[in-house]
Image (cartoon, rainbow, N blue to C red; front, top):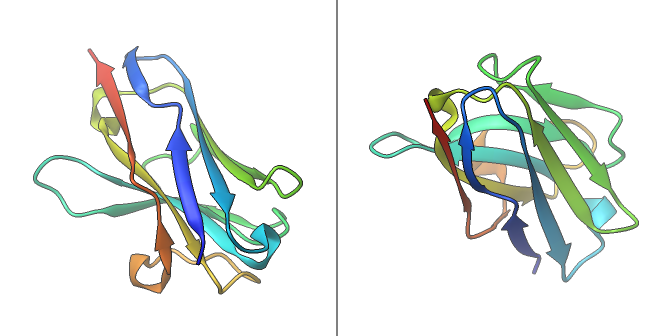
Length: 125
């Protein structure tokens, strides 16, 4: 079992920045590929960004490419999502997820085995 706890969400004005963190516990963190997903009210949960076990490979949704950066610190068992140039369309609950498919990046949510409880990000116009 892997436990994931997100933090760092909040209310920010359009154009602002936030950094989300996801702390993992329970198993060897570096054995897992990690990702961030988000879910806005009335919408399906969607892929945001993913990172492989070493941090050497990343992937982003087109809607966040160039604005968001995913990274990880295996010594701290933590994955991060730096979000810049936020817009109201980024408003959602952001979820951290872990998959045992760690060598490459995975964008499909049904491949992820473990999920955090989510953290709310609200961007005001």
